[in-house]
Amino acid sequence: MDQTPLHSQSQRHTQDLAEEFAIQLQPGDVVALVGDLGAGKTEFVRGVCRHFQVQDIVTSPTFAIINHYDGQLAGGSPVTIYHVDLYRIDTPEQLRSVGFEEMVHAPNAIKFIEWPEKASHEMPERHWTVTLRNDASDDNARLIEITAPERQMITDY
Ligand SMILES: Nc1ncnc2c1ncn2[C@@H]1O[C@H](COP(=O)(O)OP(=O)(O)OP(=O)(O)O)[C@@H](O)[C@H]1O
Ligand SMILES: [Mg+2]
Image (cartoon, rainbow, N blue to C red; front, side, top):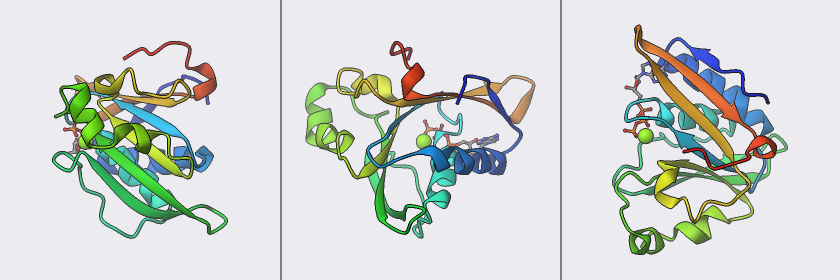
């Protein structure tokens, strides 16, 4: 996928764009979710979870730091979706205590990391980046930019 930004007009639209994006994800993939508070990172994960037929309700891992969901690949094989919110993480020790390193390298899971800059030294080099930006002229509009691992030249958050 190239870097042409997608335009979302609503919460639901962001979920739909995420659901479509998820088609190309594979077990082992890591997705950095970049964007301000309320940008729509969690809404994006909701759409991804819909693609993987997650039955649980997806909630923000603000306090749990790491949530995980049982999903299914297109062929029916199980896959775990991790949703991580590092907003409250301030030290390498805290990152270690939540088991970030083991989680982020789990080969059979797909991982979404909000506030990846809090783990910049622990992020695998190969990862997707999804950046969500608010639109000053419309509260319900977002610009969503997706960078594939192959195009990820530098850590730009
Ligand atoms: N186009 C849009 N896409 C996504 N969310 C939208 C959009 N328009 C409005 N919203 C609203 O913005 C909020 C996004 O919240 P969300 O929890 O997904 O943000 P977040 O980026 O995960 O923030 P945080 O860093 O606090 O976890 C929701 O209240 C949602 O209804
Ligand atoms: Mg969130």
